[in-house]
Image 1 (tube, protein in one colour):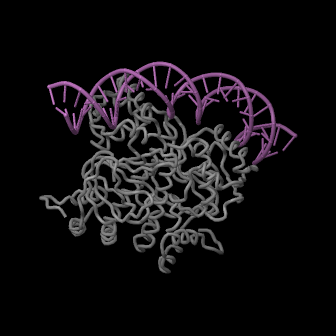
Image 2 (spheres, each protein chain N blue to C red):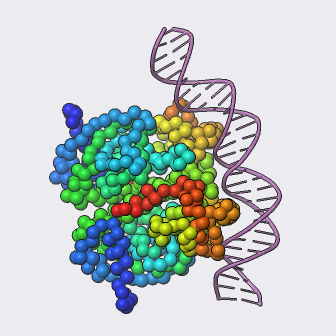
Image 3 (cartoon, helix red, strand yellow):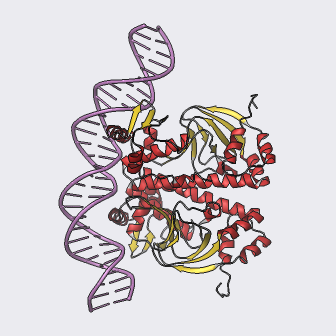
Length: 243
Length: 243
DNA sequence: CGTTATCTTGACCGTCGTCAAACAGGGTGG
DNA sequence: CCACCCTGTTTGACGACGGTCAAGATAACG
């Protein structure tokens, strides 16, 4: 266990506390869980579909994804994980994962035995409640992604993704003219949205040409949030932002 | 509350018991929950996105779906509910649903206040555990559907759907040459698979022409399960059939 | 038996995938 | 500091999968 002036598990407590009122005892219990800090290189796997999974983690920095691969070898990213998100929550209850968890960029992850977190959740209802809420939020985002891929055209999909990602990274306020980093390749965007990298490129070009966003390397700025949101058919309901 | 020689809530206990060992006390508590039996006509809504949702239910007969609608009015079905499934589980924890629950065929639903089931789950860890597992299974199926729509072509999608549906209805054993009812229109299939009704029709024709299935009205028989499964890129892992 | 929903088929079209080549950028090693 | 390479982006030409539209056939239903 690494020495540090700040216990990284605070990050996990914070995340739980976003979803339920965590008591001081629960907080203390979580802060003293054994953990390992590990760095994952881009492309490496934190959890593998079908393998034994007895750990979960908190993503301290970087971008990770949940993804599945078809028999033909095509990848579908089903969920994006950003700093502060907890990874592998379902491993508390199922020991054979149905999907992979993979680092997209370099990731720092604090790893905890799922058994330990499970014990804490059994001892403290607030912890259990928070975990449930996180799982439900994730499912809600899955449903919205399904609507996005199943029923919206490519331009709307890309626009929708940008809206959602930006709000998750920097919150829902003062969005117009705001800029953010998108550390994903166009191929990865394609794998998320059921499109090819080439077509992602075309759509980003169109969004820029039409004055909805401005691009500079990996940073994107919203020029006309209202119109973008309109094209994207985007709403924040599925994010369940309020509890 | 209707008079009947058999308490319909047994169906709910059975469902929970599939996922965790339900004690006799828990069983008794659930069996005495107040409920209302109601019939839903095709197309009618059990839960509406954005509305207040303080109930859940057990689907006694018929077919229901979870679905969302895009701004353009296109429907995406994200989950199919069959007899025995519990509806609106997330209402125990979130009171604003992010999706609609709609009857596809005529449905008999036993309705329970979500608060009551929540109380039971708080009193009996096995109940809570079973509910969690059901939510996780649903999420797993959402991910597989995402892979299906995002990364497989139309023929594979339809084949995959048939495999999954048949196994959910009649179990995973002795599938070859088995036949089953598919009480969905081709339009509803399209809304599930991100395709149009016309194209669903074309794919079903191809599957029949190539000797993979036989169709007769709404019943479908598997002629060559192995080859179908192969075309579908289907596996049962995402169903988490064992616990 | 008439009416309506659903299925089926064909012709046509558009979105998006495929393939390929040029280009930009960032890191490494000489 | 430059040459090189590798990954990722950009662009164009072309093709195909699946959507659209419309009409006729069939089945479901009152």
